[in-house]
Image 1: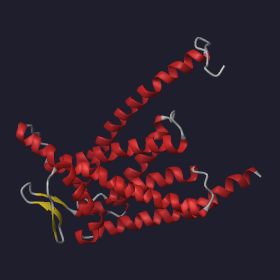
Image 2: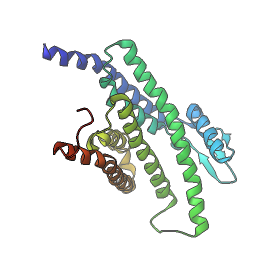
Image 3: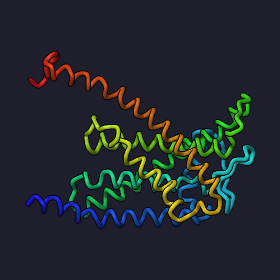
Image 4: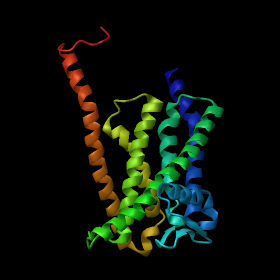
Length: 266
């Protein structure tokens, strides 16, 4: 009887996980070879959102993306955020679908479609903020005269994207856990395991598996090292904040266990 309770949810959700994984890989494959004309469904609202935030106008250049010629800035297909959309959708689907307890086709499909829809709008929101920082931070650095030999424009662009995307994933997973699981006391490992896995699997794992690095191994190693370093720093900061948030609760539990503070339920 216990085996049936375990087996039934597993075999129920398994086809949905396989379909979700295949759809995510298909979207990633489509994005890897798609031109700007095929990505206007995400480039156009992203450019519009950046214009709302900054007042900077963008015009569409066929085959290239949305450009601002005075700033010499282009929102190209590589900046559209489809990769972040895949990471967000994968994190939400694979972290929480089986925990909803909805063993019904309609609710399960609705959750998956809802995750895709939310990931689309969340990607536009976050990517707009990332592009805004990618515009203004280099301008601020050039005006103040701050420079470093190792911090090339390409490395700075990668660093900004990593910090914005990875930190937003950590925050989103934490909020989703609070909403879906009502779990405020989630451990640090559990709260960051899913964002870390999906971010590194899609950003570095898939290119490594399909040998996209073969053309320039040195550049790929440098790119991977920069991402790993930035994410490690963010995880240290996230862990520090996590301990500060849970520390008062641990103190209260410590005193309650010794009878110094009486529980409110007694």
